[in-house]
Length: 198
Picture (spheres, rainbow, N blue to C red):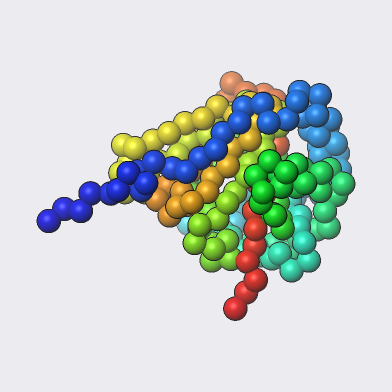
């Protein structure tokens, strides 16, 4: 007997606010982060080879907020004033006390993020991940893990907020596809909570 997914398994738990940051605040934040963040080109192992990630990244957070993903172990840098301000804004808006943030710099539309779920053990079973987008507008895709025809897409403009929560990571994968027509940079701040180890 075939067991059909429930409606909550089919629909991702997403909060989307297109104008979360006023334009002037988003401009100021984008300019500051481009120059103040310790951006790095990380390498991951794929197909038996070490390959550069198609984007630059940085990891900031509370002491002890160590994150392990894609074979990388990230120890947090100390919060900058700008990142702390964004963390406070998210607490005021969502009531979530995030202890870390992964930043991605997509230099042009040729930089991307492949299909994946943020389902690492240290994020817990139902993580809340709040994503602030700055710079070039890019498309964000979601695809159901078992029902590939179930897809959702959001355009993420400058200053927007997209929050994934509930069982979204359990049932959905997401990506940021390439867009060769885009020549401008985009910064993405993904705030999350790293749980203490056993």
